[in-house]
Length: 475
Image (cartoon, rainbow, N blue to C red):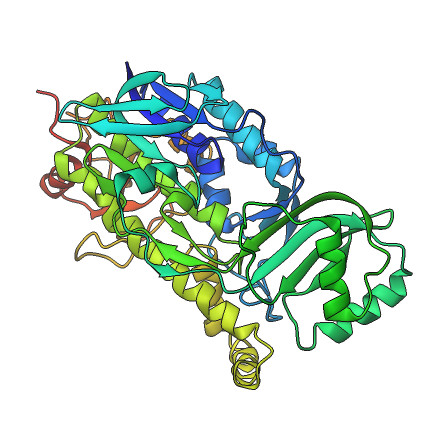
């Protein structure tokens, strides 16, 4: 018997498996595909995701394979500078092939002891008061205490769970891929500049040796979006949009995505939970999808582990939906807005022009960048200092940096007073007494996902919050 079965070994499922293994939870990851995706789609890891990777000791390995670029201009692709003093030690975007992210996170989870079985699809499940019985497509039945659906937009787990997925279906598709073009580079660049005056979603970006990464908007949605486009599909759409197919040939990979926007009504039903694209889908404006799923996983992991290990209070697991559902809803709102701002219609073009002017103000630009990169997320932990419910910065300590002390996925008390203790919670919370720590308050309690759960100086108040987030103390 397993403690947790995860359906899906994409970035969300793999990250969740690793988070659970930090707490010795017995994890099985089931992936219906026999091999990881082979096409080299470039994704962007945003600032908050880079912070999480730093917290778990993964960032250096990602930096070796990615390319850093400024965070400016990511809202609706409106040109804007990156704020000079964005409040993070990792204030950049990291462009990186998604297969690299998939493989690194899967290897990370397996290295921590998670079992990953490929070519195994979930076909059904039943839950009871003690756990979940999962049936695979080949008839095998497995037992676990919890099941988490990280199985994508067409999630089998979500459908079997009967959770509503309201929103809007795809109205328009976008073709995306890498292929070779024989047309002269200067001709391609001139045509792209001309077309982007009205079709801002269109791009042909050189990728070396005559290879281009193509993003081609399509009016209307395919009947079967699971079916990848063909080279001829690309050529037809290129001709329709630009009047030429640029001599396109020899595709490396081709895919399509739609602009469907949907949000699961509930992220938890009993012992079954949803995360990543299984819980929310939206257009790729701003490149937020992968990041949102990874952040779901880090929020959920320690809470679910606490229930499995027996120390977490029952309401703790419910905070997963309470915290992440509003965040996902906000992402859906901002992607809807970005899609509208990319429209060639006169009204949206006028609004885009106004937004372009507004983003010349640093406060507006910073607000939108913090929204896209999740730096602006603040969970509702009740009344208290402004930093309560916000992410903690990676500050210098007497020895090393703060994020280095979060690698075990435990809570952390950072105390400048030298008078506070986590006695009673030594198996769940670490203590750093550092009178020189750059804090605005005497002490902070940091959750395993890097959010500040308490700030103050009185032990009795601290003990109440330790019990709230980390259960009853050891007697």
